[in-house]
Image (cartoon, rainbow, N blue to C red; front, side, top):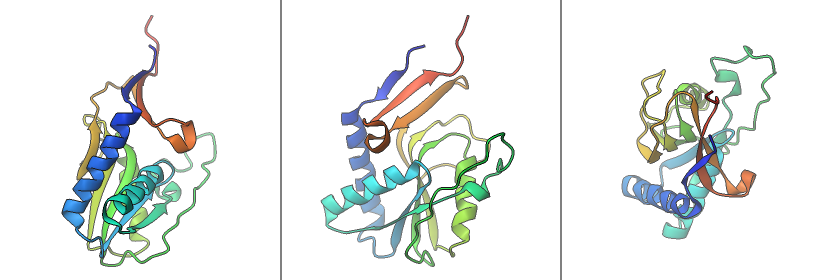
Length: 182
């Protein structure tokens, strides 16, 4: 099956703008808030949110990147060694309202690892979850996002990929089948 674009670049930007406005409603001046993107791909959404919020409010929201490699429940189980990404948290999360950000929420195992990793850096007063794409019906762990860019209902043989201008050269979300039917 040929990949299908389910969110084009215009819809992509509108979604980021909408998510930013939702954050403004709930966090007001962001004086006690921080956005933390999960490595490797949640950081693109976190950075875009920071840019959009600065454009809308003039506020430079604390934004960081969190590596979860050593907190994953599948660490060391594959044939290939996992290569960690960089954690960049140059601020304290103690008693802050943290918005944990990832690109696709599927089984929620990545988010679980992110929560474990986050606790190594302090105790936030609150943790919210934002995901650009929510694949709603495939949770292994009962975690639900507070903020959702788009919900996508897909079957197990389908994959949802968020393409970012920073890495793939275009902002879009595509849906494709992982196994060909005979």
